[in-house]
Length: 238
Ligand code: ADP
Ligand code: MG
Image (cartoon, rainbow, N blue to C red; front, side, top):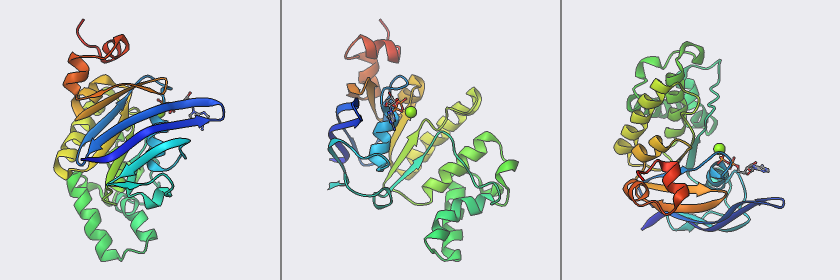
């Protein structure tokens, strides 16, 4: 059964139709990758799932509940962006625990949650450092920790590795895959990198100009591309 279900989703900005009737679904614990060229609507689709953008028509449901009109904070979703602004004056632990602190979670409970996330992400030894004392990859891990600590039902990533150098990208990709296998969280992950899509996804959705070109397993997309665009974009053998 679909855990996240998107039906005939349309989104326009003024007269510009950006998403033109998208149907997608992913099962609980699945890893859905949205892939496509720059400007095809990936971030817009992710933002509608998060509730950061209102939809024009269609519907989005999570765990059987339509969330179209729910505020982002009511959606049990956490998002990791490409640019991850950490609070420079706070330690890693404070950065991860800040949201909980705001919500009034008592310190012992906060510390426990922070320790658990730090262990998962292998940043336990960094908890007392400031962001300026971290590498790019470590900062990205802290940003993930901040999202993870909320234990969301759905985890959204918008090109989280785009700003990292090639070697780090590969390391972090492995890290995200391991994280998914360990936690079993449902993930929707945006990238324009076909290798990232092929290695991470349980299901891939290929978008072009706001239209879904193909939706399938990595093997289906690679071996039986629906059209020339998909074949070309995913580098399928010809
Ligand atoms: P991607 O993430 O795939 O690169 P986006 O979802 O960011 O693509 O953008 C898709 C299209 O929607 C682009 O043409 C972009 O200019 C347009 N767009 C995105 N956000 C807005 C906005 N707030 N107002 C107007 N147009 C927007
Ligand atoms: Mg984008």
